[in-house]
Length: 251
Image 1 (cartoon, rainbow, N blue to C red):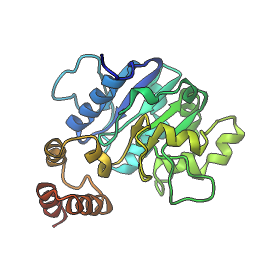
Image 2 (cartoon, one colour):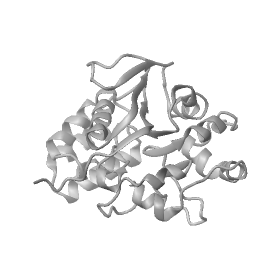
Image 3 (cartoon, rainbow, N blue to C red):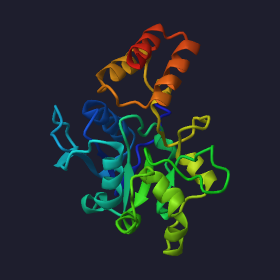
């Protein structure tokens, strides 16, 4: 008999990813999440159709997202129009649901949950948007937030305008809840519902699968800091193939 936790049914949550790059890895992340939980709807929002049709994943055409600024502008101003459920689980190609048993229905009591940012110690550290749960109410209010492109959308929500949003009734999860929800730049406990960060993929993919994934990415996708972090991980863990790939992408 399997010890695997039952797959939670989340009819009030839309699993969604918006992208113009890394379409196949994004599909893989959506499918991995669907293996852990069932959702009210699953959406890939992109300017071009996916290379394969995946049962259960709906595709909707959006304008091209040619930069991180475009992505942030879309997430703040346009995502709400695509979400019909009370909440959206927003993911990217480098993060997905990993632990069905970690789902807590109490997560839906909050308007925003993302992995804590350890580099902020002022209480405004929840959180990361790459794997985040957002209420439709939050998405609607984000449409009115000023955006000049100087910060990524999760920083706009979680730091720049958090006070304003809280005054309007938006509830951010406390850090202890965010830690149970996901991790990014903190050490994982193994009990999180999901994760974000290309430098964490090796915890959840075999080395061959990880290498194939990184080779499929468009050039210029990874920030230099991300590539250096990946290179450091590969060297420490004796993964020569991945280290060579990261060197090739750095040069």
